[in-house]
Length: 283
Image (tube, rainbow, N blue to C red):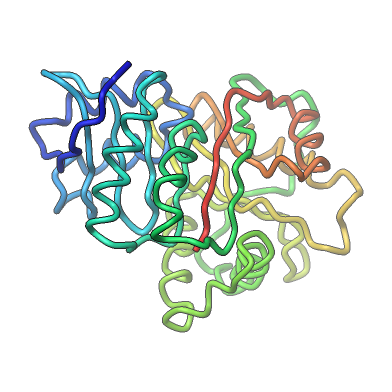
């Protein structure tokens, strides 16, 4: 069993070890891996400190300590990682809005942080992580297409509705929504926002919110409330998978709340299978 040791802030010299660790499970590590591939591991370039524990030239776990606290650990190293990362997080104070990542890494960390940072606004300990590495098994909806920059104002109300429904608070509550609008605009311009827009209304939308070489992660799936229960989400998600595998990455993943049985069934019909489990703590 690994013994807990202090976490340190990683720098550019640690990048090869970080990449080797994240490559052990690119689907589960997609968010951190994508950031590292773009910016490296120097804190200034990454925009947030990346904590790590390990011995010699190898790392057993890392944790991106930005707006979201995102831990990732080798199997068997989760408890030692939780001890080290929770200790560092307690000393730094809470600066994140969410703890999210593989449940085996998130849950023991939250056990240690809850007495200091709790209560959370919401705790979702079981969120199946699903992935598909082949074509969808249902016909894609052809009207789902990348959103154009000139459609941002049409897309934004649907994006706000999805965020509010899923997270429980409006993204407009901070800075008048300027930061959220900038993020949506960034995804649109990167070709990572897809929607079915008809007669000036969004019927379906989704974003490919995280991208690394081996995998991408679909986020923000939303169907207009009046159209739910008609199978639209299944066909539209199939279109997202088809686009993502052709343009972005060979494996497409997402995570979903365990209690959302309708969504889980829809994703299975598309061809997704459960490959792991995430957990989220929302403040």
